[in-house]
Length: 138
Image (cartoon, rainbow, N blue to C red; front, side, top):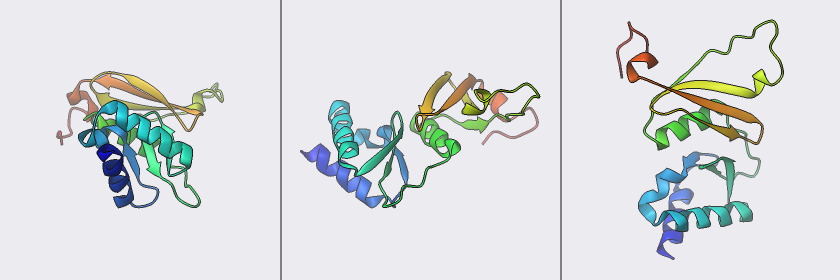
């Protein structure tokens, strides 16, 4: 019960519509308890699930966050740095190509679906390659 109370308190402290990750709540209890609580809160409409492990406090009219906002929350949750890769449209690009967004991250590659439609791909690369040869590392 303390886990549920801590999660609700944490979420109420967030501004309406603010994104958060499941990882942000790991200090409040066991992972399975956190997952179960979040699942119940989604079912009740208290929070909105935008991607696997990324949620927002519900609003009266939910604004859809950008794919970049969701990708940044997901990267922050796993301690990764993230850089967007330009999506130049080629003459033969299809609608499928427009349904994915690409980022470079330090660490392993991963991908997930945002809002049930957009595939966000995080391509793993060396940290030094994220910022280019002439840019200082943060």
